Image 1 (cartoon, rainbow, N blue to C red):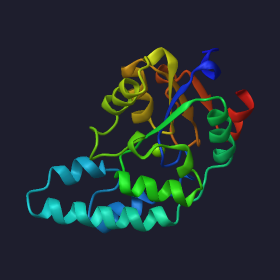
Image 2 (spheres, protein in one colour):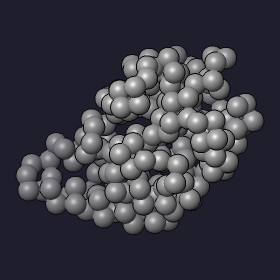
Image 3 (cartoon, rainbow, N blue to C red):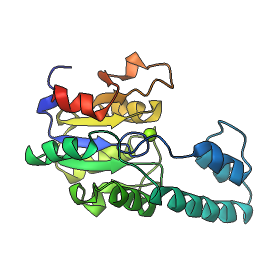
Amino acid sequence: MSDIGKRRYWVFDLDGTLTRPVHDFARIRTELGLAPNSDILASLAALPSPQRERQMALLDELELFYAEQTEPASGVVELLDLLYLRDCRLGILTRNSQTVALRALTAIGADCYFDVQDVLGRDEVRPKPDPQGIELLLARWCTTPDNAVMVGDFRYDLEAGKTCGTATIHIDHGVHTPWPELTDLRITSLSQLLEIL
Ligand SMILES: [Mg+2]
């Protein structure tokens, strides 16, 4: 898709997209007593009350702990700076809580590029691959999907973008088989994206 660089409305996944992919989902699953590779949010949602509430509180604690240790993806500040200078609107759509997302953005020096209300977590909207978060941001920004890009490192990010009708960029760390049917542009780092833009 040749017009990606001209689009002015950018929605980013957080973990493994703007941050280094060190968020330790495997350790979080172990601490919560979940099966390897299980969907954390779906597994907790299926628990009976009050175990569900207890485990969700523990998840919040673990995520805050890992957010403090977040490191920036290579090229992240340079990329956000370029988009900011081009007058782009930037948002975040994450399966984390908004509190954890803001903590991680601060840790990587990127909080200044985002309005707090444009950082959407699991308590603001339905989690990806549901496109509700992208739709909400586009409505708030008074724009349409053909002016927007969704950037992420996982299938859920790309599915959310495709369902909504935005362009999609896959940051491919080489851990998953690529999803060409969901991807308009596949790159291996934000630094590479910076060169293209
Ligand atoms: Mg991710």
